Image (cartoon, rainbow, N blue to C red; front, side, top):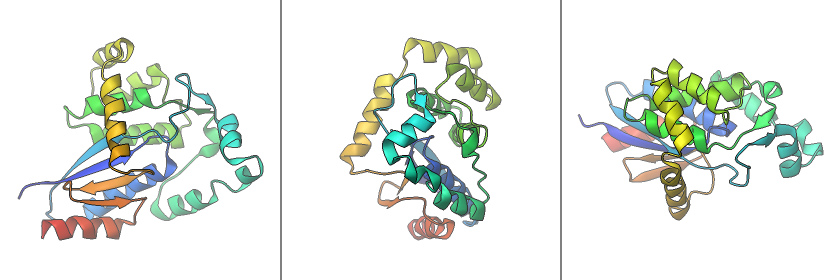
Length: 209
């Protein structure tokens, strides 16, 4: 049976994308013998974040206002608890620019490590509070996923695939993607948002049938 492709357009600083990833994992577990091939595609949750990143509190206050911060994370914390996703927002001090993280995800595709690297990035940021815009952090994550740390470090420094990531993000905009996560099944059907595992499994199963 030919594997069904699933393109996931996401950003690794999007908490709903982390939830969407875990729900996709659960959906894949519900599929029985259906084979899938998951491809992670880049998106910038906020393209105005400077290359060096910025204080997370400043970022959130500017975007949502001080008052809203008191309850901002309540919905995602509740959803995450139901699906076993442990967010540690109190540990996060920086909101990074994710260009380099998307480059790393792109390079991990050839070794079949995209899903693993993406999980590492989500966990590093949302559970560990690490700055995933820091290249040293990215190189460490690459090594943990079995990638060549020296090669990744060199590529990060020489600007490899910056234009390619921008081109993919622009393609997502042209497709009409305005929010993430966005799941595209077999390049035929799209679903926006962190859909329940059962909804994702049904969409995949229907295509397989």
